Amino acid sequence: MPKPATRPDARLKLLDAALSVIRAKGYTATSVDELCATAGVTKGAFFHHFKSKEELGVAAANHWSQLTGALFAAAPYHAHPDPFARIIGYLEFRKALLRGGVPEFTCLVGTMVQESYETAPAIREACNASISAHAATLEADIEAAIQVRGLSAEWSAASLALHTQAVLQGAFILAKARGGAEIAADSIDHLIRYLRLLFGPGATDHQP
Image 1 (tube, rainbow, N blue to C red):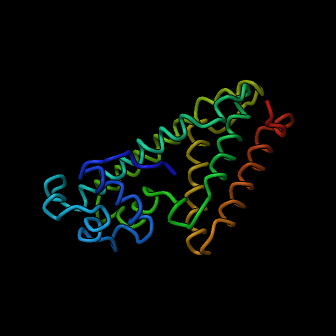
Image 2 (spheres, rainbow, N blue to C red):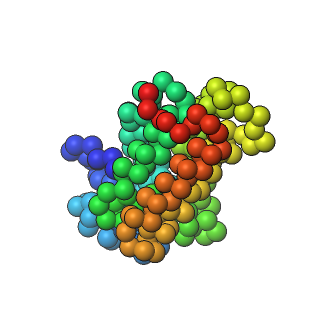
């Protein structure tokens, strides 16, 4: 996943610490003291930048969006000339990111929203904004693939883009339950097969 910036200030150190600690332990189990220790900053520095752990959670969701947004914007699947190939390339890129331990490849905002959707509305909204904005990056390619193949779809590009995220977030939950990436990789493969069936003949070869 994205690497932290070089020589970060205290705020950025805390945000980078949140990305690693919360994905490993969950939002509720992560304490301000642990975040400070991981970041190598004082508790005073924490409260200088954030009024509460919830405020840090919102900032961490936004930080995650910025880092992952840059990662996906630079990914090679955008070079495919066919829009359907770009969709499949995106999912294969997601599969390639399933490296290391579970906390290293799972989603920060998916982890946080599972715990805080009722108790921390600001975090829920930030996580929803992050997931929805990422899904929206797929919409143009999905809409173009619909047009190229002349489909008369009863579903929208936006709904299918969100469905891909539902599958991925569910795959991360199963990876946590199983303790490894294999089930997540299988889920992505199933999603790819589903999309090839959905888009019909000619949607099987994603090579440019």
